[in-house]
Length: 91
Image (cartoon, rainbow, N blue to C red; front, side):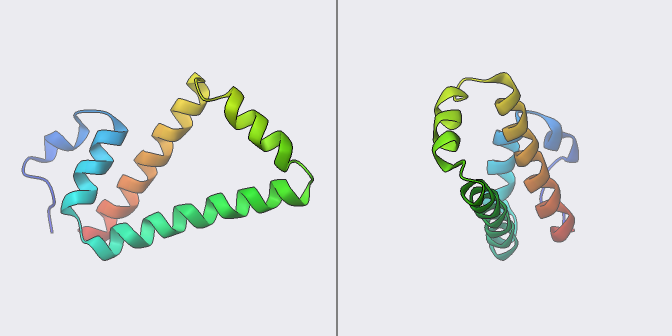
């Protein structure tokens, strides 16, 4: 299954816009499964922080890095990872 009208269009735009475009047209079961996997990773990361007594520091860090280029790049990488996972399962 090719979810792109023109495969060259897959690399136009931002990682976020590509994800949302693909998420609308891809198999919804696959999209939901990948989102659940990502949330599971976040939950594991939060649990690890809590177990190390860093949950208060975690909240401070989140607030301090809202406008942080490194965090923006990491978020883009997560969107790219989601797109890759979804596309490879929809082929």
